[in-house]
Length: 138
Image (cartoon, rainbow, N blue to C red; front, side, top):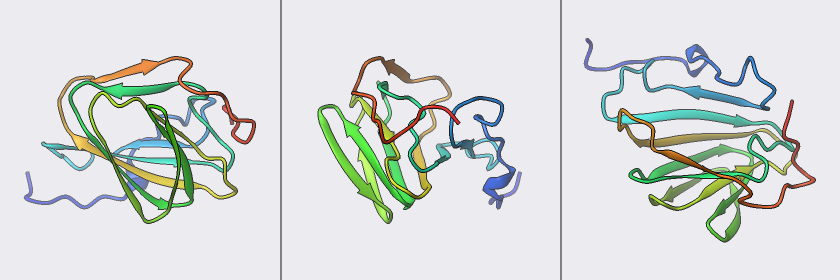
């Protein structure tokens, strides 16, 4: 194995491609041969919400979200904030979170965390009110 890896994010399979979920979800971790870090590219089309009204949390990991394009509406526990491009967000373990794109342009977000080697996400139903500005399906 090489000491470095260079890939195109377009080479990562889109987990949403065969579904009705809007946007793209591209896990880069295996493609990069990353041993310690998990990284995913999430692209959310304008006026879209892939988990309308639900959220999730992690027991062990903190996540870093890097917003590189657009403005994302995010909820962290009881706080709802607009997060514009060029922002970096840290979310502590056990913090329930969700996001949606209520804006007019595509949002690009990179999610980065420690790689655990096992699932650590717990879904939370009825986390927040569905938004009329964000559809749930393609």
